Image: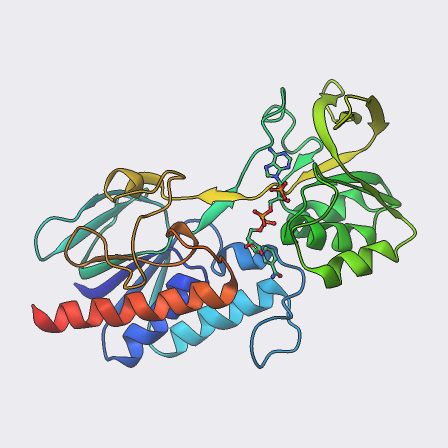
Length: 302
Ligand code: NAP
């Protein structure tokens, strides 16, 4: 039996692991996709204290290595069921492994929101993408569009502009929500065109995306030919099976305060899957430390 089982190996989960390990607890971190989580989708992280610049994937690797070097165990699997009542928390994975722990930290993060236009799901992998770091290389020398106005969209546009012949950055308002520095950088790029006050209304192409239809706020329509559409219109919680076990806010995020406690004793929640106003690498790490210390106090009180 472990002291602490952490579900989710992003910055929140891995920071929780570090804090629990430093408190002398045994730790298992279970991750279904990529250790490092969403930050591995960031081509460059330049706002993490003491690190001038690092790729998200290197940051994720280093964090996982740090956890393993301190004795943390890691497991690649999806948690498919849990038993949380009582002093022993049990999780079962899609490999039918059952792990037991005294405390559980849910750090399952967030996932990209879809645009909601017709045929979007059908064209995923054939022109419609949600991660420029993962799929951008397939569009080298081609024309792409990025849709969104937050930091993800801006970062995606910067990255894609380095390899694509043309990048349309489509946003439904006239100003961006993301960092001004990124907007300035994009404004200087000759292969980037801003298409503001506009929304994507339709996807063109049979087997593969060949273009998109746009409508501006005055109702004017036009089609543009693109090989790829990178959707970056925000994120929603990725609470999976835990959604039924926690109190949620109106958007589906775990409704927990800064103490990271849930209504179930011994179960804590950390990072982007929790209700909060700022979802950043730094706030995910902060949550991880708070949840781990709360879990350690809980275990010590048993
Ligand atoms: P976000 O900041 O919530 O931005 C989502 C964008 O998509 C907004 O501009 C929004 O428009 C637009 N949008 C939402 N629904 C739409 C729809 N149905 N159709 C068209 N546009 C739509 O999301 P994000 O960029 O994924 O970032 C999520 C969080 O991660 C943020 O806190 C962000 O700062 C953080 N992040 C930080 C970095 C970094 O390096 N600091 C990098 C990536 C992400 P409106 O503006 O009109 O609402």
